[in-house]
Image: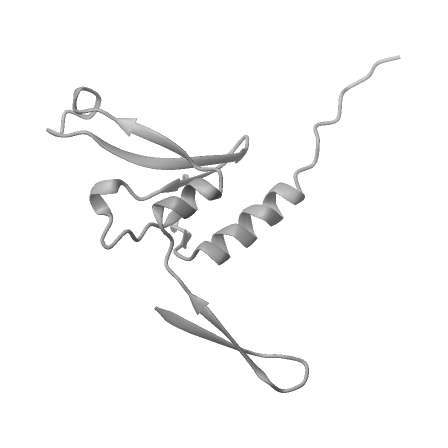
Length: 112
C-alpha cells in the first residue's frame, strides 16, 4: 500500500492512501465481465477479464483472473503501445470520469 503526499495551499500535507484496485471496484466503474471458455481459447481452462468501452476506438481491459494476486486488478487502454496501466481505483475513476465528461456528441450532417 502506497501513500501519496500532496502539499495543500496552506503548506500542510495531505495524505492519500493509494489502494490497489479490486474486482468489486472494476464493477463499480462499470466494467463488464468477459468470460473466455476453454473451447474458445484452447488453453485448458476457462478464464475471465473485464472491459469498459468509453467510445468507439477507446476501451479499457483488465488483467485476467488467472493473473490476479491478492485480489489486485489493473486496467489498460486497449491497443496502446507502450502500454498505459492504472492500478489504483482513484486514478482509474478520475480518468474514466474525465473521459466520459468530455465525449463530444457526433454532429449530424444536414443538407439543405
